[in-house]
Image (cartoon, rainbow over all chains, first blue to last red; front, side, top):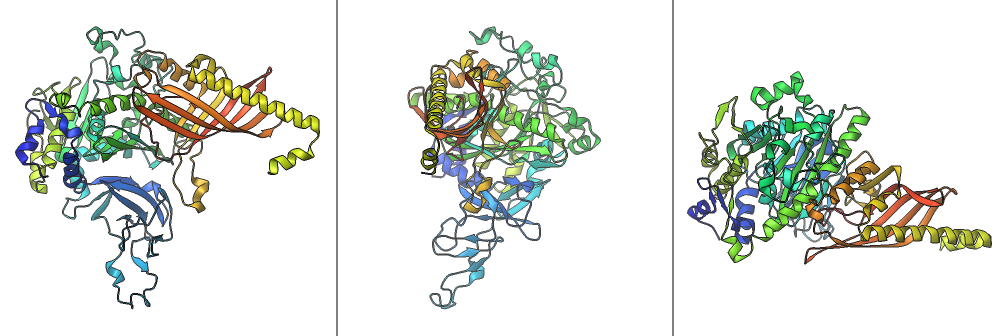
Length: 455
Length: 183
């Protein structure tokens, strides 16, 4: 089962910019991911605003473990495995709600909202009072912590503290939402299943090469709702007249959604976090309003380098902060299936009208009905399917755009690469994925996922 | 049962009028389904009022005592939250020749059943219907969506217009990779 580290190095080559297709469909690799990535890494669980009152819970997923995130009476938050200590049945079947306790419907063991085992039917008569209830509560997630309201958990008691794990890159990613105001999650988490491998979905979030093709049908006037107040910004993304018979005929600089100059910045960080996409001033950022960055508080939170970074962050492994003020989780179900969850954020103090507008935009752009994402799933499913054929599988995925030409600039605690659209964000993610898969110590893992001079 | 008892108490002419209305509404839905299944979207959208709202809430598995919070409401997140203009945008997208999730186009069949007229003030009607939207895609992909629609229909110059459509799916986690079709 265990792959040797040399075999893992064969799967991802930073030098050649190649990824072995087996990583998208091999069940053994998937099992190893569950153990070495999803049972160790900090994973996003929910936002504090979803569970304001004592007893409020949200059911989340860590790897294949179902986790109850519950607000406590003292205001703190606990996360525990949704499995009875007796015979393993789930103690909660709702996705969210408010609970006074969690009752196992198998034999009636009942747990407090803190996970403590309170009631055991027949405790005196059948167990003779001999059961140590203090040892059979719901299993607590090893570490739970919040960063500005974003609740994360890890199964690994020896994992570094959340803020250290996030590092400057991960924190900047979450600040892309947090720095906009007093942010709360809008009720309703979109959940759907795409028949693709999770890494293909993660890879895509850094990909600013695909929108003008994949999303060509959305980038026409009247299709893509936009926040951009001026018509000039909207017209920039009009691809309706572009000849798509041949890729060679595509005049990218005139039509790319990432700007006439394709001015991009990629930030890469320890443990595999990365941010990739247009700078804040890139003309390609016309679809979404970037004026919130002008505020003094936002500038202070983002820092002098971060304020210009307006691409898509991924908190390794699966937490994407989308420019639509949404957070998307890519939850691996099996090698060929990924569950996508969308959390949508608004500033609590927004006027009703603005808030409603942001909410409707969110459902129109992303999610299964979104004019962008409905076409993404089609590509990812087919890309995953073509990793299964013996002959197809011999071909490697190519990530050579900008390879070896990404000069890493270290400033303000961040490592960044400036330039045109490239594949540095994806390369960094795959490189880090390979390091995680080796099962290194936390110190070693940090060392080998610390950016060097070039990528 | 309740319905049929009510029906007994009303005059014969009124019952005939109710049957006729029911027939008209059913015909309207069958024609609508035929437009969708033959990809005649430009004609389909003309069935909507200019101020129409097209909304598919998100459904959540909740305990029985919290079932009032099962579906999200307008102002909260949804799978669809569209105006007529946005629906027109979706049609434009489908017609672009680059709408990859629908090119080659899916094959769909809309089955509309259990039509019930819940409110009738002579001009606007609140109508509930059940649907089964069956889709196949490419060679082996198959999706089934079953649910109910609650419409507000308005009678304008002898025809119906859809003023409001709420679509309630019998799924919480959506079991399909996208929603690239109309309900």
